[in-house]
Length: 334
Image (cartoon, rainbow, N blue to C red; front, top):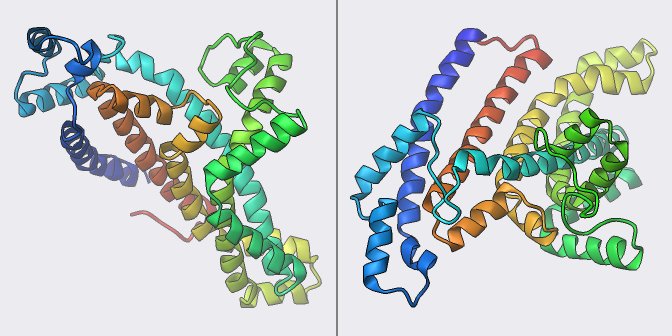
């Protein structure tokens, strides 16, 4: 297993190198001059040229690229062209916010999706099966921005039950330690703040969880139907074991592999694709951070943000591969 993990980590090097080059070149193709954006449209050509030289934007593209790579190897992601703050320090609070939201959304998606898929397979062709699959189809097809606005209108405005924007109560801010507010409030024993943080997570978490929840439910149902027809399931039922024990102990364990694959892929997609949810709910996450940086042509922030998200994505895939052998001992990595 350790050899396999080491081999996979080595394979990440060309993947990430290719990602840095592609992102670097695409960003340079975006119309607009960062120096001009920073100084404004009324700035003189001399001022723009001076700022370009100061920021190193007057150097050839390959020089800028190799300087960027050298910085990554030393843990230096550069400085934001807009705030002049080190990106490595500035990016973490935004990344932590997105990780917290994505994990919360995935917990909802896994709990609801897996159980809905199991019950649909258990009671195949029942009213619950049809209803769950229709809801799953609607969930996959429903635009996140529409669902988010409906949640804000119903639960935030009409019922006044849940907050509609931000991560915390403005009048009672969380003292950040790790950047993960749920963890920080538990560490500090501030359970009043924990309740507020969880309330702020509910609406964006549900909106973000809708699509992966539907995909997980459909995949779980399909996988469970195949396993439920297996000989070992019929044998377990013939021995008089409770149906719930047969389903959750025997069938689910053998049907979980494709579901794990979907969960891993959806987790990576949530981290990189939460920008709509973050924009609607005013969530200060990595998606909005990169989006704002694109508007300012902030090259170091865009490059570093996409690279960090890509690295997390491939690490999640590696974790899923390791979980295969944990869940199913028949899978061996030589």
